[in-house]
Amino acid sequence: MEVRTFDDLVLYMNQRRRLGYHPPVLLLGAGASFEAGVGTMKQLFQFTKVKDFDEFCQYIKTRSADERYIHLSEFLQTRKPADVTPGYRALAALLAENYFDLILSTNFDPLLEDALADARLWRKDYLLLVNGIVRPERLDVILKEPSPRVKIIKLHGDLFHRYMAWTPQEMEAFVKDIRPQLTPILYGRDIFIAGYSMNDKPIRELVVEAGGPNSAIWYLHPAEVPESLKANDRVRAVLGPECKFEELFTRLAKALDVEQAASASHQRAHQAAPEKAAGKGRTIDDLMASVVGLIPIDGSWKAPVCTGFVLSEPRLIVTEGFSGNRFKGDAAKVVTADKRSLDCRIVRRDETHPFAPILFDVPEGLNAPGLRLDASPLTANLAVRVGVAAGERVGISSGSIVEIDEKRLPIAPVGEIDHLVAVDCVVAPGSAGAPVLDAASLAVRGYIVAGSTDKPPSFMYPAYRWADAVRAKPSRQNGRRTRGGRARR
Image (cartoon, rainbow, N blue to C red):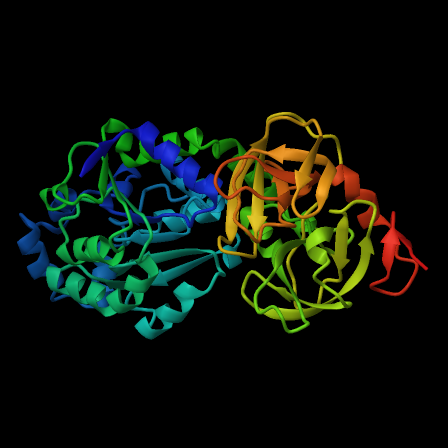
């Protein structure tokens, strides 16, 4: 075990995000519910008129599902369910911003779901999976699918489904039933533990063993580390009063600069529906749905060779032109966020710059909302997101545009290239054509043309250089090469 600080935790999460690593898994325990107003186990014993856990188990195991619900319904809900606590609101914002995408919860209450509703995460963006209700063999399929992005698994059941594991035997059976499906999903992923004592042996074994030797276990607790974890060299312990659930997630959201972006997206979502219907992506999930992989169909390529993205207006798929040279004819394949492969065609190519855009039509069946194009001048120190859909590391990276001055750089194998802007981020191969977006508005400010895999900067071709070519009306048949948006004869 290694002791780390809260600042270490923030730095680690920032670095993972910058490098486009898969988000960690979050295990939530009863500590989260207690701070939000749900009673403690001691209060539950008093409520049930028993003296300890053993007596409670004797009481509850003889009750039917309906009897358990009637007895516990009021106790397991806060008195003001419409008032989402700051900690849960911050956690919902972190989920919306893709800092987490898989939550394992041992709680029966609806607090997390209430927070997601308050944050206006669309139903298509998250999935609630109640152990014991969802068939284990279906979990194997659902958990591997990229959409919905956020998945919440209630390991011990759920109040409103009237299916809850209370006794040790029930808890062990619940976890045993889904362990074969969860183990491959958790393998290799870091796991954060908050509000949980780790006294439950089946859960402890699942978390410790399923991640594998290369995953880290971050144990976040206000006081101490359980004896069962102290000898484990994969454990990173962050201890202190700031690790109580409410303070932990509010501070984490603030340190990761999520609060302002989240509240802005909430406001946009409240205004919402008309702009969303008009196809202007406003959330991280809209961004991910609008980023695609592109494959030439000459038979040489089985996987996407570059990243592209759907614009809302004009409704086109855009990628950068040098990678576009691999598309010899007019036809191509587009790979969507949910891994479907659809036919598309090249609308036109622009040759005014080596990295000028190549444009594809949006095939029927690709219902992504599309991203807004912002061709205004860049501002220094702009926080950005980069969406990648091809290559060895697919997902969202974070960074910033520190300096807005254009540069002339040698880019192999093209040569000396003008009008490039540095992006302080790291992206893996396959990122060519990936949209660089304003982190607050999620509007496209450029696309990646040269990615750095180990240390910043990467480089983008700014949107103000190619926006006119994208907006120009084609005057000849699809696929003809153009200069400045006009068809070449």
